[in-house]
Length: 124
Image (tube, rainbow, N blue to C red):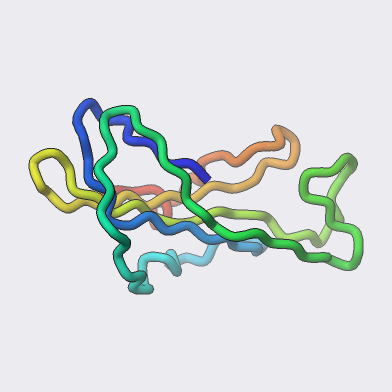
């Protein structure tokens, strides 16, 4: 997964965390916001810089019918596929910030789209 500094000044990346979630619906409370993840070594990202987050691989089988990126319709009981996480950083003024995100895989468009949920799409 890629993250980008879309601002016009540098930012210092403190932590980037993302994880897979397979469910029919997003939980009401964002599970990522409740767990402490240790910070990583800070990395300065210039304006427009892009960095990779290693999320690990996954594989699963749902009644032997679920194909995530393949052709055809998914199984009717197949769970939705989400990526949830956050980016913790200091801006150019030294202010600590967090941006939370949630994306759902759209099987028709074959890409992840932003979720419309205030517990998953916000910045503090």
